[in-house]
Length: 246
Image (cartoon, rainbow, N blue to C red; front, side, top):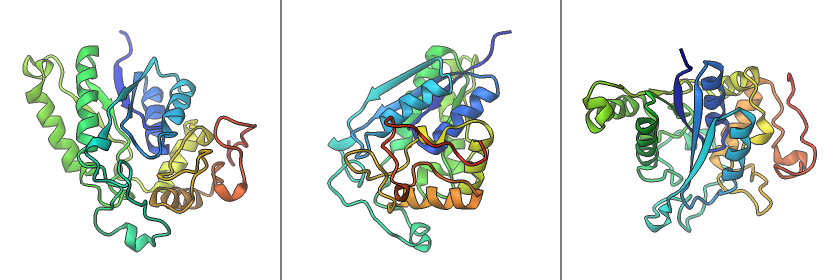
């Protein structure tokens, strides 16, 4: 019997890279899906390409989808990215870095590709603990999308394939994710998490995503090779130091 096929949403960040690595570990033939949606941190597209190649995705496609026309987010409009927020602030409300309906849009494309590939599995690195209460990262949202997929596709209506959205990180802390990623072979140097990098691609070290990533490495007892205070070369340049414990 041939290995099952999965579509893996891949942003180039730590969480999506970990999900792709998990899918590969579990024997899936992975097709990675990335979106160029007009995001402020477009350098993550380069990270996604590096991660897909390193983790052995069978195919990696990047879909252009310019959400700047809609705006409404610090990631797609001329709105400042919040910096230096305390953990209590990050945990309250829905931040301006939330992109309206982004995960619904992304999952819809993943669903379409999965149907074409006759795949019943999608891997998605959402997290309901460390992601500021984004409404489209909650378990109940994922369950609702799965139900919708059964009604909205030919494969679902004909009973040939019932879509399963795998969210293995959804209830994990960032420290647990970093520890898991280290154990299953994710090369942290290839990833990118910052919402507001400098022109050379260095992480700002101060946005919510950078702060959560830093806390994760601290909790896991590992050194992040992208820590800006270390003065590293930008991703793709120079010799990358390896992670503690590799």
